[in-house]
Image 1 (cartoon, rainbow, N blue to C red):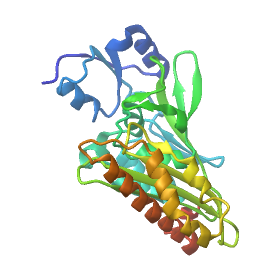
Image 2: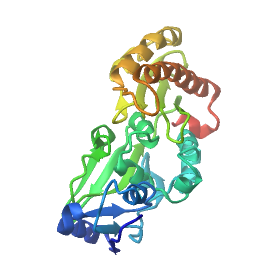
Image 3: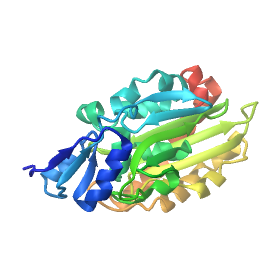
Image 4: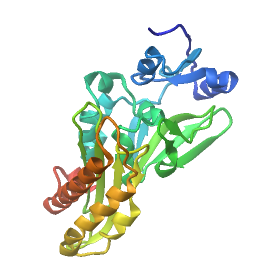
Length: 299
């Protein structure tokens, strides 16, 4: 049963931040509400006020310009899956959004809400890690950029200050002859394991000039695995392929996998190794073939 609460409807980020500062821990930002309201119904959390930010203008825009893709925090998963700029320049992101949770969540859930709730078994954070995303947080008197690597502090916990609101996400466009792949595995609605790989090849497509690896859904937070990346960078394709087994072992060990309803630690670590090989091969194949579309070469 959902207990009574007061709904505040600010018309600006500044007004919303002021409400959060005034009411402190008794208030919470409300956007899509797909996670928040369920937790409140179950009695897991309780807030006297919800700060509805859905009426604030321009927080749901998706723009391409100056070598950057900008996504408003109120963009729904459905709008991201249907976005023309994302389909053109970042189709792997579109494919991820098309498979987030279920149709109810995709219809009303927002990318900002997903990140701020910091549910461990969620897709977007893992993919954003290999994209080098930066998040914009605002409050009444200040604005700051947060590298995605520093955003997640723990399960259901972020680095946002009490009166800060996540307003947007920026992703730099990748160079030519680069590609991205994200694969997940799970037998429940939420993924048990998610692995993202970004690859950039040299002009001849014969060696790996950049590699980024991230693992999510296995532990409290998604993680970038730089030790695994170092095993792939600067190598010819044959050497990089031969290093995948070792890179998978490193990624599995460094992922902080824990046993839960989604699988045991050992099982998740095994799946990390399997998915890393597959995501690498998928990303490399897209680089070599020109991608599913011209835009795939840019992410």
